[in-house]
Image (cartoon, rainbow, N blue to C red; front, top):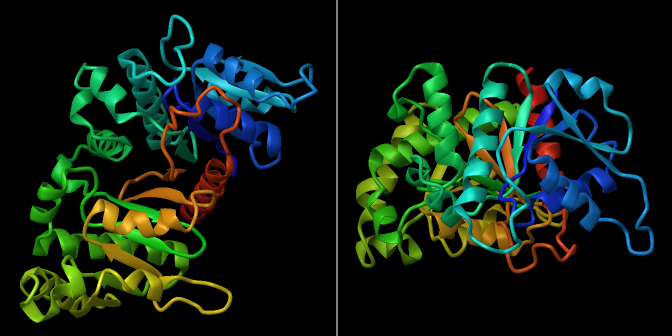
Length: 351
């Protein structure tokens, strides 16, 4: 790709800067053409933290760029950073900070606008801390996470109302992919979000996004909301009254949607292994934990979070800020590398 890929720093108190520095050290070829949007001092601290044991003087420069275009001038074994946030000094590891939340948000907004403007091919976001984002104030507390912030930026860029820019969260690894009807909200609110319109909209967004990446219509397996998918109404009526009618409407539009299936077995049916291909390309889950627990249980190392419905490519690792291990030099960059590979693939399909 001719345009650079942007990686946002994430929360400076978490493992985001560390896994970025590790990725540049471990896979310089894969990181060619990538630019970090963040704080130079924080990335320099992370680069020092990731120095291999016994090799404290191994060359690894962190260079501040003035523009995306300068990526062409970056030498090998160098981590290029665009300073797009304000931090007086690197924040302490593992502590919730409104300052860190504001810095992370500033990087996300700048990167999103750059990709929307065509200055970059895609963005990969390192983890943010939702409490830190809420503590940042300045209107940021209204965003539960990346997904909602990027939705707002994309809607504003396109001159659309927020309701006219519907997005969904997909978590994927080589064995299982799942898309969520609702994202970051209390479970009680998530149950209320299982409506005919929301389920049908999720099926449409999933069909459109995965058709592009697969090159064919995706086989969608839809999870029920209740145990045993309601057991014919004995354990709840949402399957009969809401989910099944939405599936029928999707099928009438030509989508390959099947279900609702018992949520405790549909993920096993969709799991794709060398021994047994999955029955479905993706499972549509009714709420956050129903869909994410099965994917994360298979291992976060190759898990990637993809935002569907945006007019830009955004991926991220499928783990959080890991405040408990931040600053210890033991964070694993595998999921970030998987997110970078996924972003490159999706961006190439849009080119």
